[in-house]
Length: 331
Image (cartoon, rainbow, N blue to C red):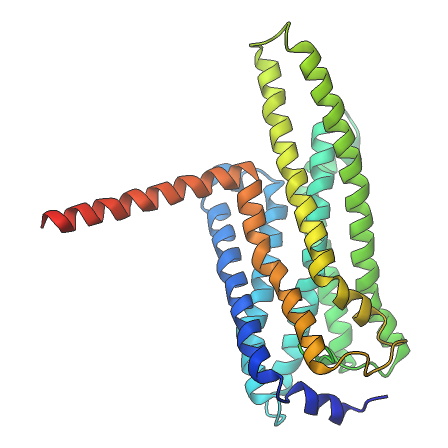
């Protein structure tokens, strides 16, 4: 088993010179993209007034904080961590990394469940659970529980001095010496697996519902070609398809980009310590950082209200630019 001195020597070794700027740049782009998403959502009344959009906002906040960790906290910690002059910052960086990663997984699941319940609930349905899942109170409680879990997980690891330099080259959890702490850490893996399972289940049910609904609408269209009810169903199905596309991308891309880290990191207690050299772990970490950078653009370019507002603001910005250019040329 590798001792801590060997891990620290490799962690702050030669690979840090190329890893640090690349990782920092990706995380900075994550901050900018998610900042744009949050800004659009919070400054657009028609978006922030829809309670289900707060799952999207929470997802953006989670990825924004992860980008802040990678571009600011870890960047400073890399500078002073090698000589042990900022142990508290190193632990804070590890806690930020774990909590923001874990929280990002569940929000696509919450979004697809919310959409399924919303479109399949009939008028006058008195089911208390269904009403709770789509209510503002329910969304607040569910999101709060997700954040509480990741904060508790990070706090337990912090109490037992388990946060810091990860063998994969980022600030996360230290090399585990206690199997029980490793099991606590692995509740995060079970949390992610449960989230993926629930996403697959409700995505499949939503897909079947949409297919059935489209067939029903198409059958009625010759009779009710201009009916408001049919147009309303078309709009609802368009929004549902957009949600499904977003959930698919937000679920499959992490499996491709981040799956290697999950498998190796999750099995670290049983796998050889030297399975991957430090440069290999850092390549996995760079792939891991791509998803928080892409996530806000997936949301902005697939979800109807966000996409329309982004286009509107882009058009306004272009018109202002053209107006300023025209005035300057006249002067």
